[in-house]
Image (cartoon, rainbow, N blue to C red):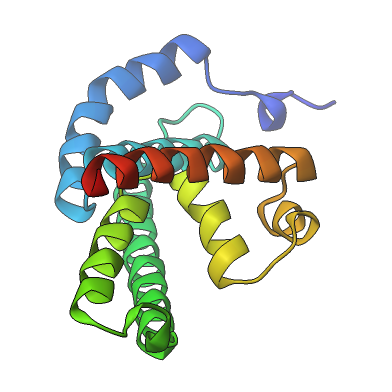
Length: 172
């Protein structure tokens, strides 16, 4: 006869107690590994999920596993951030410089426009970049960002509205 111990799950109250006891130290460790607080919190959450998935009956979750998970995921995060920055810098270096390079006035306008685009929210900046510099249609942007085509178009329109407002104030 089966004793049922193989299917026994940790008591949720014990799990909550484990979390209360260890999360502060895990978060402190994650802060040392991550570039910002939000990333540190994400790392701790991922570590807690990993411990929950690998738990065994009648034993506490493996604390060393939590620290190892934080460390591994922080390394992965740093690598992906570095790759993304390298790709973005390469794309900027390879971008046609003739778009914004004709005269001193044009260079100044270009600088102001680049600052204005940088000041947009990420969702608007992303759509404008894909539309203007990427040359994508709204349907292609929608596919790339996994959003409806109408959403891509409205984000583009709202982003341009914000740019017009900023540029109008500067050049008025």
